[in-house]
Image 1: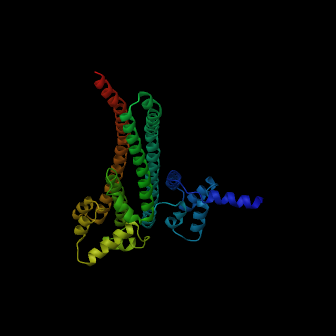
Image 2: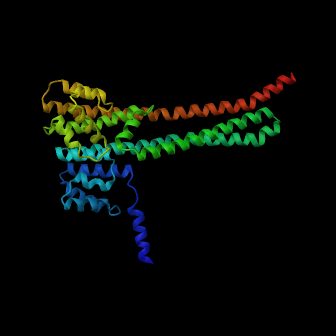
Image 3: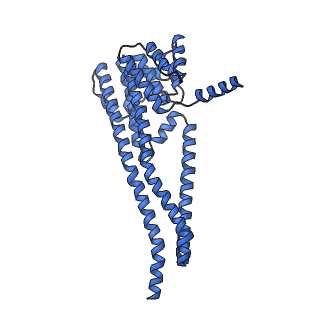
Length: 341
């Protein structure tokens, strides 16, 4: 019985999904260990000693011992495909430490923004729940005592409308999330960049990833066709793989690279300007890396702007509910007073 309980407990913890916050911490620590002179194997070995409860680093170390690439072994951390592909590119082109750090920062910022969003939603959500309970209380106690038939009908319609809105919103959100999980990474990205409010933020993030990868590969002396050929090896449906296939197909059909950049939404217009500059390979690589850094900063600014809009929007909704609530009570009373006068 004790053995069965031990196995059951082990399965519970081993199957637990690694959060974005944990992934970010692991990547940043790995990056700092490498920056301080650790080899990647020694860094992974140290991480396995520091994280006894997490068997992922033991698995990564075993994969490295068997000769696998670090980017392949890192699959045990359950990183997003787009970041895992960046690690593959970085290892092949000598920028692994920097890419580990930047990837960790991306995931860390994602985790922080989620926590901040939850904090921003907490207070308005409590107020909205209180207002909803107040409406129910008015319906049950106040309206019957005042014998306001019209007010009772109005509050019924308002509560019904709110309930329908909440149910539809939750159902739609769950369906949308389920649909996103079923889609390939590239199709999911195409959908997200078209979303209102958050679309431009996602676009600047994907452009940062694309430019960073191109910069690292160009710095290694690869031309565009060679970059696309190597990117075809990535998992089918990922952003880098699909873009590489589209560019190769386009070039095989006789289209020039500038035309292909104009046709593909995820490729930034700045890429066209960099390629048209006529600089050497080294300068182009530096420009691509610099532009990727600017896109990263742009992503952070857009995220902060969106988060700053959340509470004002929710408080506007709260104000709307309060105004409607007052009108539900005051309009019938005003009508009665008018009849009496």
